[in-house]
Image 1 (cartoon, rainbow, N blue to C red):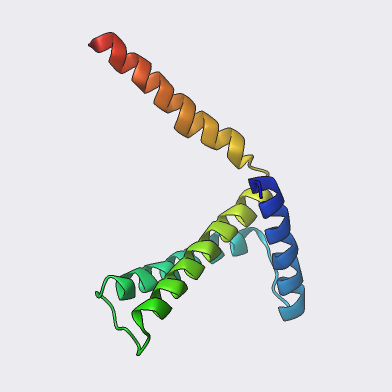
Image 2: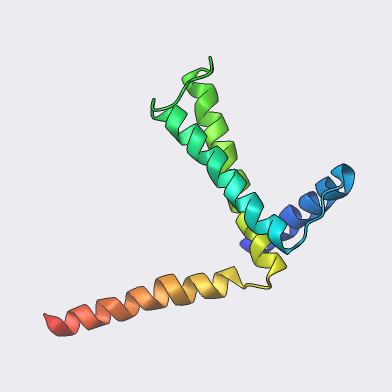
Length: 111
């Protein structure tokens, strides 16, 4: 599945969930939701790396929870990007790939 299809499905789920539970997805909600999910991911990471309470979960259960929280965080970033009309693919290509290529070219001229 490409990122645009994924973002569309995530948006559909989020809208349905917010309607069902009466959540107002205003401008602040998206960034606060990212912060919430990052906190949950951090908690699971600490549990996974044995630096947090295990809460009677097995290592496999903690690993799965960690993976789910990672997915939640990515989905919230997709929602925030969509809400703010950010083209993630375009910006990833520009910021990560083009900038990297430019640094490589610059480094090759130095050597």
